[in-house]
Image: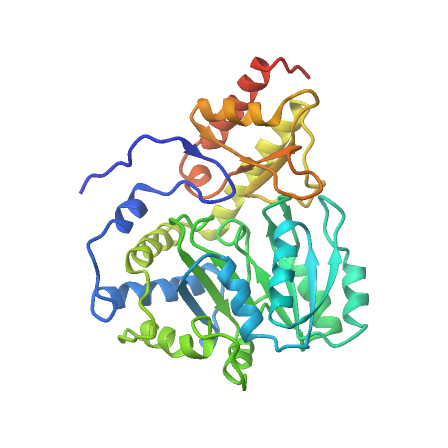
Length: 381
C-alpha cells in the first residue's frame, strides 16, 4: 500500500520528532485485540527488539512498555526501586534532572543533588566523593537533559559507581537519548533505562518505555509494600514476560496502535547497523553545531558535552527570540524555545534525531532557514 503523510511544518524540536511514513501508517492500523494475534506477536517483537536496541543479552533483564509519557518512568523508579527514607543521589544537568528529583521526593526518597554548572556536567571526582559519604540506593543520571542539550558520559559515571558503591542501582533517564546516543546496557552495568516513544525512537507520543536489569527486577519484585497500582512493576512483570513468550496476558489495556507503530520503528532502526546510526547522528550534530558557531552563535552546552540529537543556542545579541522563532515557523519549520530557569527566553533548541538525520537532510533545511531569518532580522556576524 502506497502512503505519504500530508504536508506539514517540519518538526525539529527535542520531541516529538518527525516519523516515517511506515510508522505513521502503522499507527493508523485497524483496531487490534490485545489478547489475540497478531497483536501478541507484535508486542513480542517489540520487547525482543528493545533488548537489541539497548545491547542487553541477559534473559533476566526485562523490557516494559506502558501507556504514558516518559514522566511516568520517574514515578515507576520512585515507587518500585527505592523506598521512602532511602537515599538517592541525583546528578542535575538541567530542568528535567531537577524534575526527576521532585518526583523522587514526592514518594519519600531522601535526595542529594549534585548540580552541574550551566551547560556542563557533574565532575567524576565530585560523584565519587559523594558516593563514598553514605549508602545510596540509587543514582539517577539524565543522559541528555533536554533543557540544556548536555549529554553525560554514562560509561565513565558507571565506572565510578562500580568502584565506590557497587550496590547502588544505576538509573538512566534516556528520554532524549535512546536510539540517538549509544547505550551499552550490559557492558556499562546499567540497571534501569527509561524513555518515551516520541523522541529518537520515532513514534507518536503515548508510550513509556523501560528496561530493567536483573537486579532492578528483583528489587521491584521483592518490594514488601507498594505506593502505586498502575505503575507497579510487580504487576507488569508477568504481563511483559507472557507477551515476550508469545502468550496473551492482561493487567490493563495496552495502546495497541502505538505499539504496532513502535514495532515498525524498531524494525526500521534495527534493519541497519546501530553503530552506523549513532555515527550519523554524531556527524550531523558536529555539522550543525559548527555551522551555528560559524554564524557567531554561542551554544549552551560546553565543548565535548553537547548531545548528538539536540542543540541549544543563545539568540544573538539584538535579536528578539520570539520574533526569530515565529519567523522560522512561517518558513515551515518548528523550533523550540528554551526552558532552563536561569536562561529562559534567551536561547532556542533544535532537535535533530531519527529520520530527520538518518533518512533526510532536514538539518540543512533548518540551517538555511536560520541563516535567512537572521539576515532578515538585521543580524550580521
